[in-house]
Amino acid sequence: MDNLFRPDAFLWRWCSRILDIMVLSILWFFCSLPAVTTGAASAALYDAAVHGIRRDEPGAYARFLRTFRRELRIAVPVWLVWGTVAAGLLWCGQLIGTAVQEPGPVLAAATALVALLFLVLGTLSWIFPLLSRFQFSFRTLNRTAWQFCFAHLPSSLALVVLLSLSAWGCVRFLFPVFFVPCTEALLASFLIERAFQKHLPQEIPENSVENR
Image 1: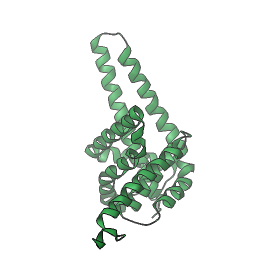
Image 2: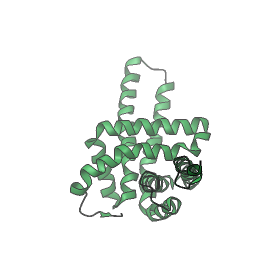
Image 3: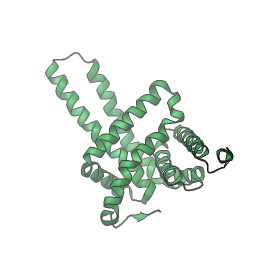
Image 4: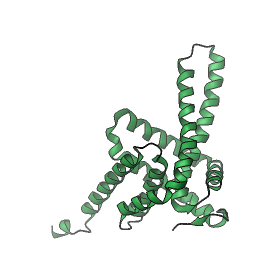
């Protein structure tokens, strides 16, 4: 019975993990409220989730805030570009869905739109984890994320599905925003970290510098 109340007991470790997931998700939500800072918040969330929860390193909340401040300069313009493109494609999708046209043209347009949206969301799925781990210029970050998207198409597809379901759940029901963002980052990290271990030591661009 005494073991139950030890700080390192299994029950309390899991309670601590659940609390970390909720706090990091809430931090991400509030840091994303200005909209333009969503990219920096996403990079910070991924970094804190991997190091603070998966690797059990101390100071997850401080790490989130530190990474958020550090990556603002690059993350803001990157998010403005890719976020605007994604929003534009989603808007076009709504127009296609409500347009009264012949089935053939609608199907062709919808197929092209889905392909473009996959490329955008797939690239976004790699950009901010890369930024959280390495220092990049704007151009190198976008090129590297694009390369990862194509080099790991099955993982990119899984990441897009995971990101889409998480975003839909948070927008549709709101309350999942208190735990889904960090949960999504943790699940995505199993695919992303595997790709990092395989490629980054050999293929990281020469003008990028590792943060960790």
